[in-house]
Length: 252
Image (cartoon, rainbow, N blue to C red; front, side, top):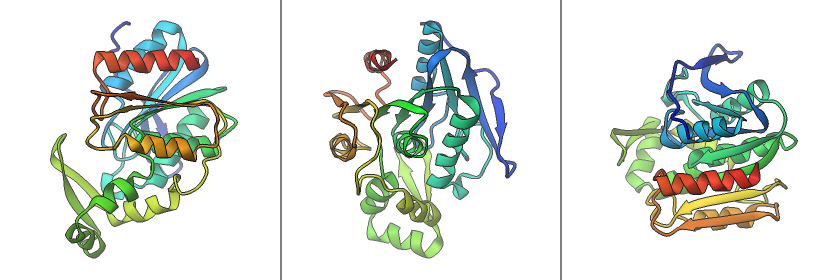
């Protein structure tokens, strides 16, 4: 696959003046939309690999940055799941035509599910990579020590250490409370299209059992889980990317 250079992005402006940075590739349907993970951006390994893959096939493709991420506007401290979902829906509505395959990585997998529920007629299939459905409640709040929970409740935010970042990440009370309005694994998920879930069994951030829980919640019949025994959370090695492209190619 040809290497993709990450040039200056195009800009989509929301009604409130906030901007969403994106790269769009015109091509044949179904299109592919990549939804990145928490504190990730559209210049990551998987995003660029998917761009190159779609370019090689002449497939339409969009990658973008959420509010408070990458080259999009916004203060991360003001970000919520609602805001990120709305960003994804604006991208889907304004930048794509016809049926789309959504590829969601980690928290992007949760946003992918919310977008599919909101636009069922537009979404052909889903590919989740270490899907972090309900992450703010089950993987953040429920895992925080009582002292951190108390600090978030009292001060409105707390900074949490993160292996991938020296600064850690800021978790706000607003993010946690808003996330509770979008939980998807407490009831059946009304999506009927094909779903593919890829998960590394050495994932230290999102346990692979979360994909089993998600599969059980999905109303879709055509749901397949692929577990990578030595795979980590990112699944960004060459062998992992090859698996992702093979999985996507079968859906396209």
